[in-house]
Length: 411
Image (cartoon, rainbow, N blue to C red; front, side, top):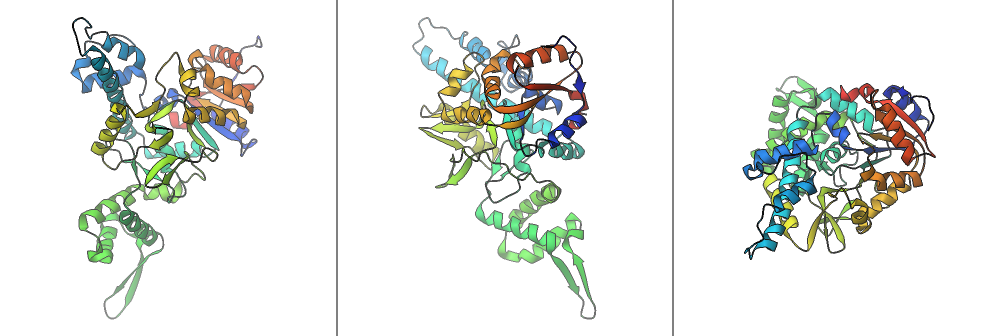
């Protein structure tokens, strides 16, 4: 490592450098990305939300636990002496805590996403569209939500997110999809003709306000669609119309496709959205990996709970801080993610990672890749430490630090 103090460049300078390596730019996100947008999915915030949801945790949350430590602290309160249900209770609490953890995280994401201003959403889009593949160390739905909302081809398993508790509203019923498509087409190219018997007036539908547009859609659909269903689709369309008009990312592929009425992991070759430590919405049954998608929060949580408590199914999430690499290499979905990471070339931008040793298995794969330049967010007070850590993992790569406070969406 050079003796001179590392330099911090600006985010604008990074963007210029990324232009030189298109179309081989890749993104790796840690929890700091969420935090930069006010999405507090650090352990302290999650456990605080869990305590708020469950008073029984109050006596346990006394320190800065990670999840596995917290599970261990809860289990330690179960008495083994003269307790015939000891093993059952340990398993029960292990599963219950993980489920409560997932609920807490998704509540936080749902609640705090509402605070992201529209201008920030536009800036996030401009940031994300620069990359060809997306890797995340997080297992919450935030990046998933962002990317799928910018997905270009809406016919290929687009995930539609609502700002309610929380998660994924995917794959509307076929009839609802057809209604939405008619509304979208009408808004883009439809002409409203008003004929009073003498003169005829024409007005483009996309010039109407929401109230007038809704009235015309009710007349147009008539009795073909119930009033309640039509209103629901129009509300969804109106809320997302600016997004679909202005912001699209060319290719987003999480590897899951519809197969015999289930979304299963079928296309690792084309996948460019990779959850390196798994995610709450991905589970395994036998040798097959599935994606949980539900329309209502109640149904979603019922499904997650079923998966957590089913001995034959398992949510794919690497919670351990000590044996992550072992857990990953024993799982085909996770192992494929590492292989994808080791196969990239060009430039890699890392946001929100502390470059800690417990993620060394991830950084090792980056070192094995053909990546030439690595850009890492830092700040003035941490730049020496960050540069030292980066060169520990990537001594053969060109490492550049850039000032996280210059990233526009973080303001």
